Amino acid sequence: MKVKTLLVLTLCAAVSVAANAGNKKQKGKDKNKQLAQKEVQVKQEPVVEQVPVITDECILNISLFSESVKNKQFADAVEPWTQAYENCPNANRAIYNSGQKIIKWQLANATTEEEKAALKAKLMKLYDDRIKWFGDDPKYPKAYILGLKAVDYCELYDADETKATAYPWIKESVVTLQAESQIPMIDLLADVSNRLYKSDPEKYDDQYVEDYQLVTDLLTQISKDKTNENAVAAKQYKDRIDNIFAVSGAANCSKLDELYQATVAENTNNLETLVKVVSLYKRMGCTESDVYFAAAEAAHKLQPTENSAVGCAKMCLKKKDYDGAVEYYEQAVTLADDDYDKADYLFNIAAIYSVNASTYSKSREYARQALKYNSGMGKCYLLIGRLYASSKPYASDAKGKILNKTVYWVAVDKFQQAKQIDPTCADEANKLISTYSRYFPSKEERFDLPGEFGSGTFTVGGWIGESTRVR
Image (tube, rainbow, N blue to C red; front, side, top):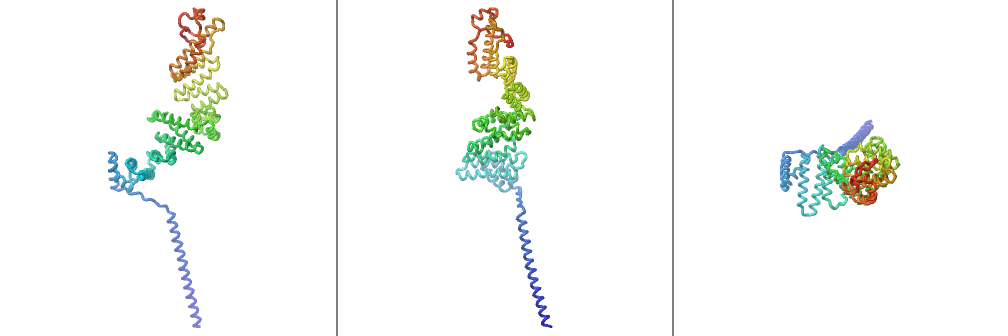
């Protein structure tokens, strides 16, 4: 009995030891699992960067380098600026404004290529740090800083001929700031985009056209804002960019059709897109394109504008709907702000009416209206002169045949006026003068009608009704 009891006790003890060992082993596993979970949690928690403390020493250093930079004592500014930049980069925007000047001074005085390369990289990093700490500045946000970075990169990194590295910076800057962009930054986008296009036309043609449209739209907007002090400069920059684009090879009407045909078809109710397309086609002189007509017509239905009216007028001309063309050109005159544009549209109406003798007087009327908006428009006088030269205001009898030649006097008068006010018309005017002077009434013909030509002046009759000198 005692032996049995002892065996039972021994067995229980063994079971107990085994159980305890199992529990300890399980607890160890649980503990390891918990530690592993904690480790995962620690890894998943984001690392929060500590914001540098702005100390009194930092404020003192900012004051010291700011005064030195103001006095252009850059050597004295380097040490306090370095301390402020390294220890409290979030303290003041002056760290970055002055930093640009200090690093550029150091670059100007650097003697080795290694030193220059390090300083260039430091300047680029300066812009990145400014974005990090002051990118949300309402006056000088990230987009503005990216523009500055792009400008300096393009000036300093000569080896990068296309300036491809700077492209995304300047593109984001201009797209974000729009007409608030500085004009040199807008110009830089056009320049870098042009460089990329020239390096690989097939790869960058679409991008170049898109950038050109963005840039010229913004410069046009600025140039038309009479309250903007940069309005004149914007017009000058735009003219130069237009000329570069025109000779680039990208300004191809068939290429524009390829790019925008689907865009127009898919955006017949998107006024903003349609207006941009119409404006681009007009600038490129691709106003005979069906894509241009479609965009202009769709835009005009949504909201009539000067450009859409002109597009519709050209479409009517192509279809030989002359009444429709006149109507749209008249709308364009009403919608236009620029007097020279108004003059052009009125001249186009005059040209439409000049094809039919029954509407010669209307043609002259619109040509005269055009001259009110642009007094130096010589082609208006050329047109009126041609109208006169093509007229026969008198009967076809013997006397009338002589009097009908007087139209060449008043025609030559107009050709003379044309070259006087507009030197670009001189060659054409001289040819017309030489041609029609041959048909003046001869001495014998004037002798046969002494009552008509005796006074030295003569008023041409009919719808012309103008006085001229007898010759």
